[in-house]
Length: 121
Image (tube, rainbow, N blue to C red):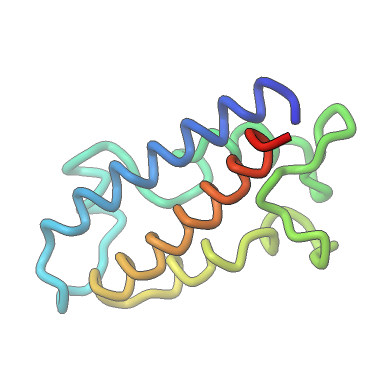
């Protein structure tokens, strides 16, 4: 994995942990709101806030840059970045903060597993 991709992955993990910490302060049954998160911590779960997305989504539909594919893209997916990460889709579809938190925890686990794969090689 390219050093820039490793750094983007590390930054993305930290980004998600920051969002998760903030989300845990919200009433669980309240409707999750990207705008309230942006207002409070200047971050959200969309691609403009994600270091990996900024690195790879500008590469076009194949999520590749310099012959490297985004580490979150499943080898089973071939439709581009918008379909790369089922964990993110669960976050995006969650209705309450409780559901968002659960999905975000899975997203972080997924990203950390990808980082561990790199670190163990």
